[in-house]
Image (tube, rainbow, N blue to C red):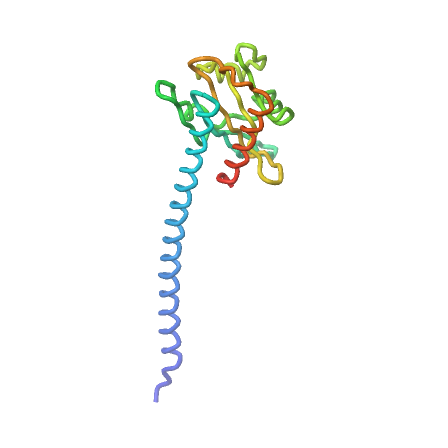
Amino acid sequence: MIDVTPILAAVITAIATVASVLLGQRLMSRKEKDCVIRETSQNANVYTALRYIMEQMKADRGYIMEFHNGEIYFSGRGQQKFSCTYEIVEEGISAESSNSQNHRVSNYHNYVNSLVTDGRFLHHDVEEIQDQAFYQMINRKGIKSIYNVPIKTVDGKIIGILGVDYVKNPIPDLGYDEKSLTFMTRQARMIAGYLI
């Protein structure tokens, strides 16, 4: 009599392997769909928030820049960069997100340092900006006035920049005092929840 146990074990193992691969593929497919659905929902929330911010701040352009690691230097140190990941513009205002990718933090040190130390970057007249590299970047976008605040996680880590630009006219007199800073900071905190 032939012992079928090893053959039966091999067949069962093969069937179990195929079943687990198929199940894994099905779960990955579902997970990818769920990921896309979640991302789409989060994007909708971010764009809704940006539109609200633009309305309240009476701005022409609203955007989010996120910090990221670019390439690696020969020393092994990562290049710290920031890129525009979300943008909304009013009718007649140019969309600039494609021109705002992979900016090296080191090239815009004064701008980023001001955001970190002051908790905002505000210029009623961009012609007064002393940092020539940053001035040239925003001047190409037609910006007359700018208001940016850092986007921070709950533990205080800066992950991005929430900004509004004024292109048609300089910042209107909305009383850019602590009330405006509080508003922008709260909005940045809320947006941080969508980004992480």
